[in-house]
Image (cartoon, rainbow, N blue to C red; front, side, top):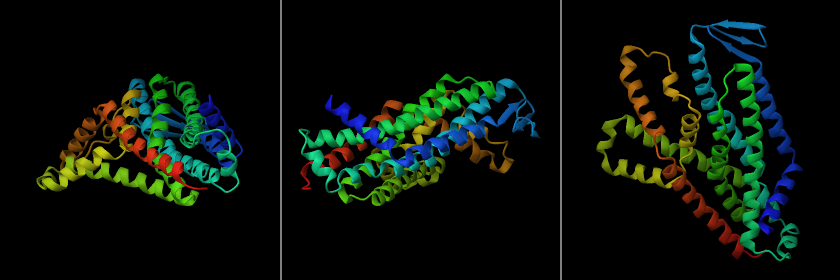
Length: 308
């Protein structure tokens, strides 16, 4: 009960912050923009027919629905709730722990009959609830728009909600540790975003090794990248899992027909992405959460030992 009360209290604090409502406004604006676009075989209409774009890309309703699903999941997970959404969520939550450690606030909290690990965990999970509420609102709203406006009901799209929270947790653990270590929201933001870029970079280098078979001749480098890829959170896999569980096509499947000289490279990229989408979700999420657990335990240990 104490843990739940701490989580609820942390979420209520977030409602008093302007960033909560700013995020909500951004989500409504993005959803409204989606609502203003309609798709039909052979054309795209904008602002309910104000502008019409003729295109041969959509030739059949079934193909249209598959393409809408694929593009929607990839764009939303990569940009809207991926890089943009999670970055904004990190900015919104980075101050939670440093604010808790401010002189006066921490004195009141530590005077209560609560263990320090429980107090830290309550604040940490409160941030997860913050993101869960926003993810559920945005995904639910866009689900209805895709169904009513685009006539494509996609129940698998709801997998985006827990996957987004998991993606956020991969990065937020670094923010939480930095908040305890440096007691600065600015440092927490910079370190967590930098860690996210590093995680994505490791995966990108790993994909490059898979694409360029000649690079695998450097066995020490290839093994080092594979080990690093196993250890760090696999942020890119979240997008792939969202596309897979929603029934969307891979992003490379949406590419136009390439020139003859580029066909082999594109086919290799498709094979690499299919291999990545076939990854075991228990393995990719489990190993990533293991990294998160280690970082959270380090932050919890420092919070428990620090004098305030």
